[in-house]
Image (cartoon, rainbow, N blue to C red; front, top):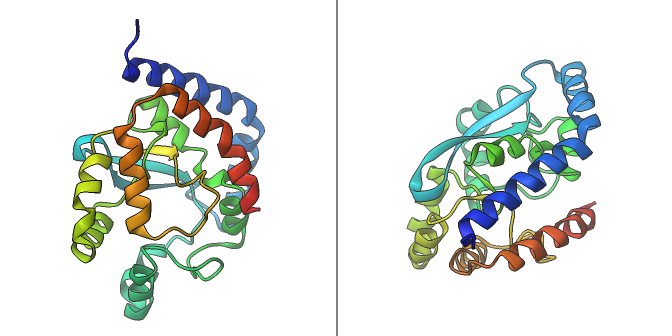
Length: 209
C-alpha cells in the first residue's frame, strides 16, 4: 500500500505530463509572442522557499519588463511600500512592471505553465501552499507574529501550483487568512482532497477571466 507522499508524487507526475501534452500549442506559441512583443528572455526565474526551507528557482513565462526588479526596488520607494502594504502584490491592473502580453498571460494563468517543470523535478507539487519569497515570509511574520505557526506548517510540505485558497472562489485573500488556509491544508494529508482541489481549479481559473 502506497503512503500519502508516494500517492501524491504519482498524481503530480500524471497531471503534470498530461497538462504538458494537452497544452503543447502554448509551449510553441507563447515563447514566440514574448520574443516579438518584448524580446528575450522567454522565462522568468525567481528564488522561492520550498519544503523544509530549501530554496529553489521557480519558473514562469516572463510577463514583466526586463528591469522589473529595478522599477520596484530602486526607482520609486513609494511603489515598493505600496507593494508591501498590498500583501506583496499590487491591485489588479496597477502593476507598472507587467507588459501588455503579460497581462493576458496572467489573466489566463498561462504564465505559470513552466512551473510544471518544477513539479516534475520534485521541487513543487500540483497542490500545495503558495511558493513564497523568503523576504515576504520574513516581512509578513514580523508584521503578523501570529502567522509564524502557520508558516512552520506551510514549510513542512512542497509548495503547489494550485491550492485551497486559489480554488476558494475568493481572489483577494489577506495574508493571515491565506497562510491559515495553507497551514490547514498542510496538516490534512488526503489524496482525495488533492483530487478535489485539482478538479475545482479550472472553474477557479475561468472565474478570474
